Image (cartoon, rainbow, N blue to C red; front, side, top):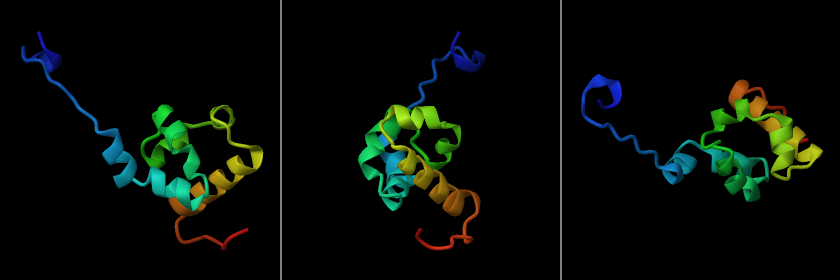
Length: 91
């Protein structure tokens, strides 16, 4: 019996490359000057910017981000994703 009890196998495909480009993880990391970590975030399965909600500081330091880079990433995430329009400029 296939998925959903239909008797027919259902195949789901997911185009990581299209998601990385269309959902902004690559652009978001570029905005934070962290684009060199794009592949590391893809390896964490963080293809979309909203996936960063589930990434903790231990994971971030595990892929090589410094404490300052983690702070910058969190700040820009909060300004652009959680509270768009409240940015106070570059620090």
